[in-house]
Image 1 (spheres, one colour):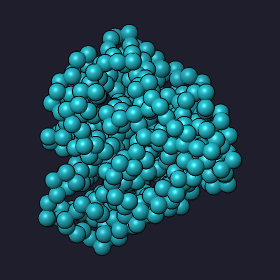
Image 2 (cartoon, rainbow, N blue to C red):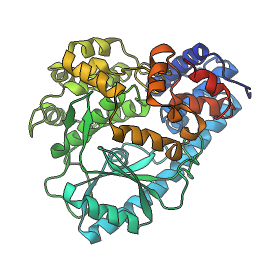
Image 3 (cartoon, helix red, strand yellow):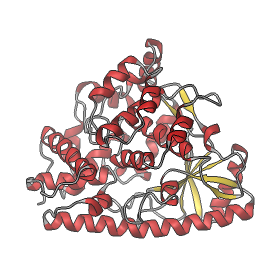
Image 4 (cartoon, one colour):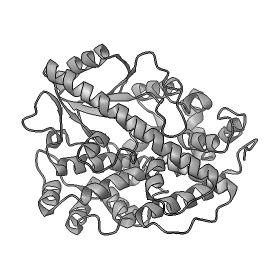
Length: 420
């Protein structure tokens, strides 16, 4: 099936929500019966699997077989995830050796840590990049080391410095997981997120107290869970959650005992409460019943804004993830603790900092979807007008949908979608 143009957005929205929910349920509670989907819905299911990073996991978990194209897609995702994992493991070993010799201590974050403790087999979980946490005073030395290993610095944000293999085109990427997709390394000196304006910083709780030169594990299993929860919270706030993140949390939760949960929820080192962890924990518990400690859920309600607590009760995965197709003006405003904070968040969206605008202008050269749309070439005033009057599709979501449907990503239909 190859379409000349996109179906109506309402059709795409309905199919994306339906297939997202069904695929996640098949991971958590597998059934033996294949869904009776239309040809369009099977294609949208491919896009949903890519968007949520669960193609390889579905290949391992599904108990039924779908159409030939679907089976070929899943087999390809599993194959490339395995190849990519092998390449990443070799890269991590190389980094460990180089940092050990240079006397630089680092923590291999998120996916690297989950693989290291054996939560995943090599063909189940995708990794788009390698995240490393180093001390602030080691940042420049670590950057020089990465450059010596053949990487070049491509971007710098308040969250991290991004390094990509020298000479590789970051915009040339396969659909979903592919061994040829460039492997980025993101260098962090802090683990902190804006939720939605004020910063929650957990760095002091994550770095081991006596690290050795080279790559280190987190300070504890609770520290790893804390980071997963904070990162997932940020993505939920931005309506950018991926289903694989909830799966990470549920798997890690199965390894935690009462002492680990207690360590997670107690206040220390200036981190006040766990209110920001309520949305990811509640959503994980909804899709993976019995996975999250009731005491931890109760602790996370303390200090959580009332509007956010209400939103948590009704939100589905599709509501707060990349499956939410439309651009919204103020996504996650319910995370604000007060009216002044909400107004500050709205102001930051309407009048973003120069650095944020500069990062947006870099996207066409650094993301495969960036050069396939005019969105990032519009003035910020034009983008605001479209937020308010037309709620256009998010380019990060519409891109994999168009690829799955066999539509040229830069086709003229995109211009129609951007009209207010």
